[in-house]
Image 1: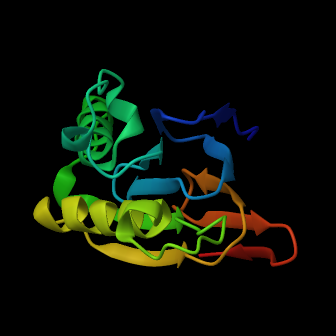
Image 2 (image 1 turned 180 degrees about the horizontal axis):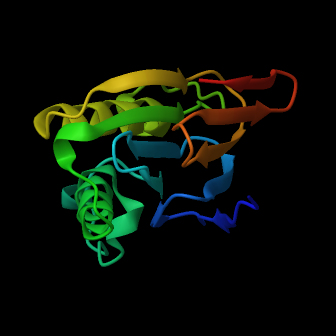
Length: 162
């Protein structure tokens, strides 16, 4: 069967029911949050840029922030038949793309994005079953509705499934 491939842009999210593939390009400090309901074969992918909608004034795009994107993604998945008890998560991205002389946490967006995603998922009782996070390189990911596998491609670091 031919799989439909749907691109998820930066500060965007999408959910689909099997069959299909969700992909997002160029994860640097951004985090790709891949959710999968294994029983109902519903997948969701968010490409979040910032950890919290509470820390900025212009927070109208809820897909931009880990705290609000995850909640919206789960609602969208539930509309497609997913059940939150069946959902597991995989994370990719959250790199430190630039070196700074200042080691304050403010500049470590990637690490903060990863922490915020983990915290929100934990709060909702969703286990993180695999991660390819950190480092200083970009990633492209593809999430497959068939079995929830997440393809991670990165220049200089190869291709792998998590």
